[in-house]
Image 1 (tube, rainbow, N blue to C red):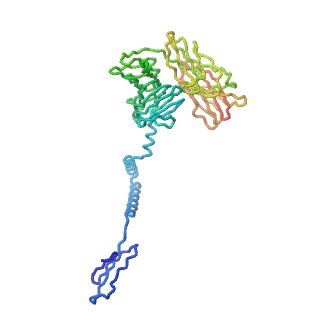
Image 2: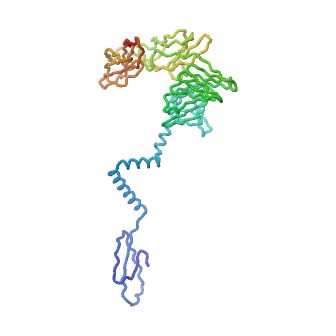
Image 3: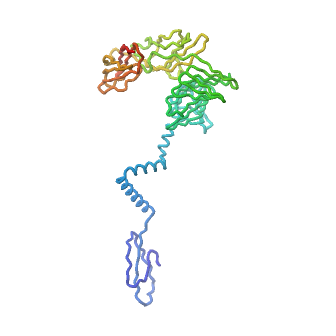
Length: 451
């Protein structure tokens, strides 16, 4: 047998010849004359070389034809199979996106804040792109503060000179469990509505852990040097686990203890409720620096004094005003145009002080005499305990009614807005607007909600 050629003696019958893409190799012939004898008929057979790549291409082509046929006959089968294959194989990009969405992250940074990752031995400066995982350490300096948020909406505000550890970050579609441990310092935390009853947000200090319920706010402090530890609930509720003890805390209740000592539960002053300026409300003045801005809050039982704080940062690391008064309102001047945050605490005759209230934000604008904007409002209609306001403003303008942004403003400037439910009695509705030219407008409407 010669390479590429097969000789066979099959009488006079000639086998079928296969076409080949290769040039057949010419068989070597003997130099001497062959011996005389009967005539031999030669049969030359060629074959086609097929590579693995060709096989794969044809296989994929057949598979595509089959899938197309299945989709034409039974499209729902194709969808089901596709989903199962995708789930089995997994999508790396989707997995990475899910991991990012479930990671805790910084939403506010002020001053010096450092992070030490669980798998690292060095501290690095925190930034808004720093992901936070279980076991990470966060440290704030004397001028630092940070706010971290988890995927379930729980926020932990880490105050100055504080060291905390991220203990838990298990956020899934049907439940969430988040937790931090305060090694030293203070942390405020606030929860939103949980996705399931099994969800929890916890903060640990020494040998105690506070589990906050949904829509709750609390403040937790740890002072190892003075051996003082406390948990204060400002709103909502929490359950504290310390050894075999389980203590329920409701608004304006404090739990305090020392290492190895008994647990003490007590009532404290409630923080004041804020009235004015309304949250997110713009304050407009022709001369902001000399304008007198009115601050007002609700009275607290047992309180004889209040402390008002105004800051350009929502973590109050820098104050532009701090005023102590005995009344429930005060006037403040000397603010430049810009965004500000404010809150209030109360104190009693024993010099016990409440936690600070929730924080409101307002914006101070300069009103130019030639920059007024159009704002027309019809007489309000009372719908149950809400007021319906219909009016028209300039296209592209923004409106705030009693601290609520008006979401549905038509391209031609017409709008319709329902206030939140109001208590029976007289109310003043404040409508404030601003346009793209810097113009502003303000109207105040008095209504009466029937009993």
